[in-house]
Image (tube, rainbow, N blue to C red; front, top):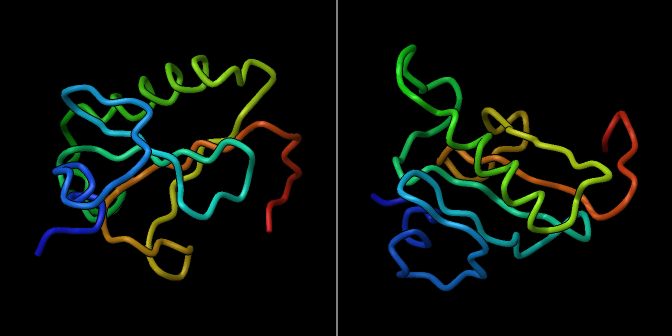
Length: 110
């Protein structure tokens, strides 16, 4: 069964898409925790970091994050987050990266 994010990628579910290329699709989170909260999702349906093969080019996620951050005017700083597994807060079983910015981000989060 296709994940929620695959359905967004295939345009079966609407989303505010801000970036896409041959490898990733990025869209605004529907429940943002920062003024800029964008999800960057690989087109390939991989459940999470633990399911990534040892070889392969997943650099596309970071490249997309850099381009989107620049386009969103986040030159002062931003945070990239990947949650692996339910215990870490992953709610959709499809690898994705959160791009957060638009305000000062404290550490530790939460």
